[in-house]
Image (cartoon, rainbow, N blue to C red):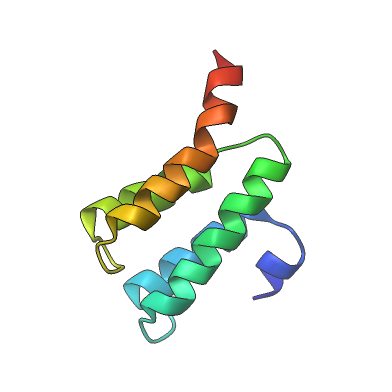
Length: 87
């Protein structure tokens, strides 16, 4: 949890995956989703969109978290302005 509190996007994303997969902690899709949100927001604040894209993909596929097309689109929409600027 400190990774997300301290603003480390990569470690926060890893924490999201741990909760999503149940690695070193019981699987908890709700916590995983919250950490995906935090990692996405931290990444966007530093000019990155990888966490948003990963989270969008996870929700679209229903991989480790419940399938949720609306949430997947939300993550991808957040990432789009950063992707356009990168071109």
